[in-house]
Length: 70
Image: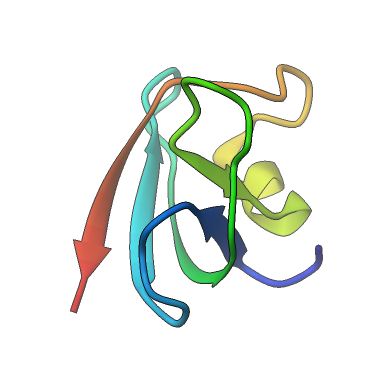
């Protein structure tokens, strides 16, 4: 919840991903440490800490683009 982490259905645990909020242009780098999201149409769930940095606390769901980092 307080770490820069995320849940993704298929990426390996430990994979680092850059997430960009397409509504405001903010980006964060998170580490996949969980499975999910389990809601149809969602690609990634980010932690509360990452959501704050992305500026999506009020909306809860925003369009994003993700890049897998090496």
